[in-house]
Length: 191
Image (cartoon, rainbow, N blue to C red; front, side, top):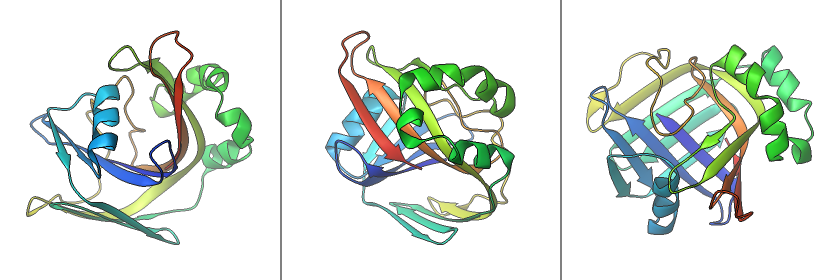
């Protein structure tokens, strides 16, 4: 699962959840048709559901509710990578050139891509601004307990990049170019 909790976006604040089942079926849970259409136009899903999505964050504890999903997790203290990301000014982290510059270490250290081609002739850049490990989690989806916290292996397949292989909370600024080379961009900031 990938939980998006966006403090700022062109759609206002919202949260969404991307789910990939063990059989590979990819599902988007989004709160409005507008957000669902945008996300589904950028990432690959087999099914899109418009459902209420609620995220509550109290300290390091997160509770996520979306249709048949109940997820609770607790994040830990920042490690070295998180401390380094926090030192990058927000205005720099939001620039596509920064995402391009940090692409090699992000791939080597975290096995993630920070830029790449997305759906519908879109291009994306991820500017990570913080990283904390997830220490514990419990989840029930469609009435089934999902078991213990585990590595994200194999990687999820929603777009050109996956998530770090160790479950974590990442604060990220995402920039999406709506048409390759058009200069029209949509930027969201969250975790």
